Length: 62
Image (cartoon, rainbow, N blue to C red):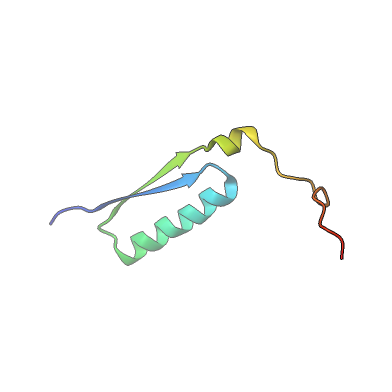
């Protein structure tokens, strides 16, 4: 039998890693013969941009 490798790419944030871990566990539950790897990466947006504070963005008037 040939082993099937699955690589899941994800950002390094806590939420992204939690969601990716959940998917990896579900895959292994459904198909224990899989070789599942989680590959973490950063985007340039992760390094350079900040989220707006609540209310920091204006909307056009009525």
